[in-house]
Image (tube, rainbow, N blue to C red; front, top):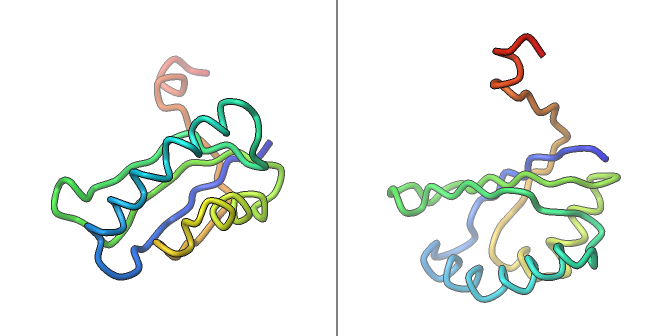
Length: 100
């Protein structure tokens, strides 16, 4: 499996977008946990609460980037955000500090 970062930019009003996200996210989380999705979302970093609404960052795991795109489309996120999905290498800094 490859790790992917998705850089999302909100479409329209960020507050409305996050309200809609809050309605969709619990179902996505349950389906990911049950293994029902083509890609697995691992983490989301959202600076909205700190006054930054232009970006949201999500870490995914999938066989190919198109799987991430499929999940985003299937759960209606493309109505809320644009997405730039890119493969990444994850560096564990705690392990690196240990010499690992």
